[in-house]
Image 1 (cartoon, rainbow, N blue to C red):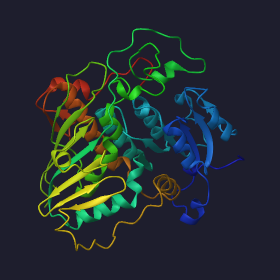
Image 2: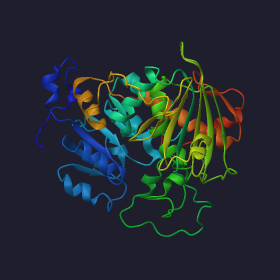
Image 3: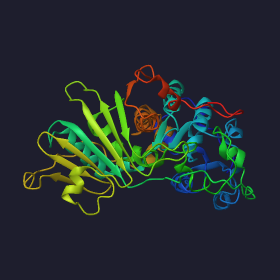
Length: 414
């Protein structure tokens, strides 16, 4: 790709026109699955390094970017001088170690959702990004759509009045059950120890890797961990939510290793200036809000329902409906006031080049991820938890703190 001067080595006072035209040197960690889509989205930049624990699954990416150096262990990537920015698309349990190493090395970071695997990791990553003054973005791509912006504009202009109640749901669930007893050999080309990363050692099994890791507490967070950031994002954005004060959860009996087939999680957020406290309820699997099941809305497999004093707003990725329909028959939507996005990845790339801002920086998405992950803490502990966000503590059930921060396997650190 030729000799290049990394942007991180340049003065931060470089003009937008100078820096915006130069390609970022990007390392992509995790290049298959979700990583393939992220690689395609940033592929017009200078892809200088690729990393994946599975050499077979990385074949297509390596063929597309033959000049990029290939690694199987991300811990070997970050001392390179030609890397300005890093994209992390690994399973949840390795998000935080990869992201923290990149930040400490002075790299900008784009990390898939949820930002981390544990609440403690989310706070550490958020604080490190602020300390290093790096440009960050969490991969909740739906945040960049016009539909979400229009929904936020409706809420923030008071179309349905003050909102104190939100319902959020998704059909996603992962519940593999008991861990398999057999121990097949590790496939050729899979660097399984690197895949495990900081997680406790478990014998290789295709029930874990590559596709089914979301269903195990060691590696993922189930349906809530998968979809919570995508959907709760809209409520956090529209209502200016940040840290919860309490969480409680219902579901089937807790399995020590497998995530549940359904959950109902009740989050409580404090008042914000002139805005009332908010109760947000999450549903996944086959559970839905009563308002949805009674009205029998067809095709709303995922959604967000805002309940205001003057009406309701029902939103999914592509639609938004004000309710009741008769009340809003002649409603004129507000003039747009939130700038439309140039694209979720493009926002990040441009901001990296110009010291600009992104819409889902870790300052915003870190607290969002914390809230999502606290739902699983409440579920696994079997307790309503009262949360002291400032001190990162559960004040009423200290025994539940074991789910806030996980131990790392020897050889791995945050």
